[in-house]
Length: 219
Image (cartoon, rainbow, N blue to C red; front, side):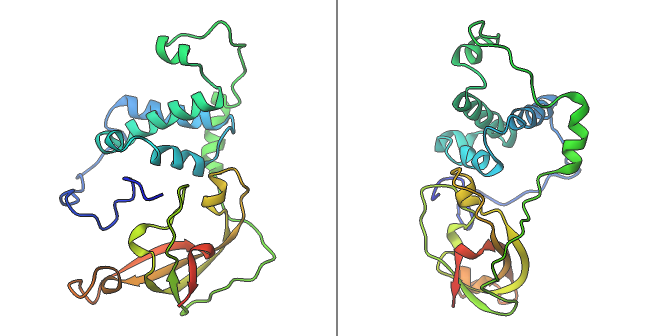
């Protein structure tokens, strides 16, 4: 999407200021939001890419004013309502809607740690052969999809070099729309800073991005 979330290369937001000794959570409610997202995700009503897309489609003013975990919470509410896991009445009252049958949650306390340790690997086997190889020049495609994509605006149409082949992985653009995993090769691509930002950029700087085959053409 060409939305407010795609801020790469934009001006006006001030310098990035890392927080020294940043804690895992700044407040207990942030940890509860993370737990809530994991518990809701266990119902498998959506996937990680659809979850990311739900954050991207928050109203622009909300996206800019909300903190990281506030975005997660707003997204969780939207996803849960859309999937029928909660009702509008439950959201407004904070109490169970008696008209809805009680369901047994798929994620219980004893399953949490194994689920975290297992993670959500996206590597997939494929019989296809890779289109590109390390050292090959490529150009990021000039696309403007209305759905989820992991190809940022600032590299579209820019020339880069394949650095590494990571094998086939779930393609987020189709997965977010529930059109299948469509596994394809994922590459680390090096873009020189001057290719992206012009002659004012430091000639020794570069940006490395992991990009899927559908994002790339031979340069």
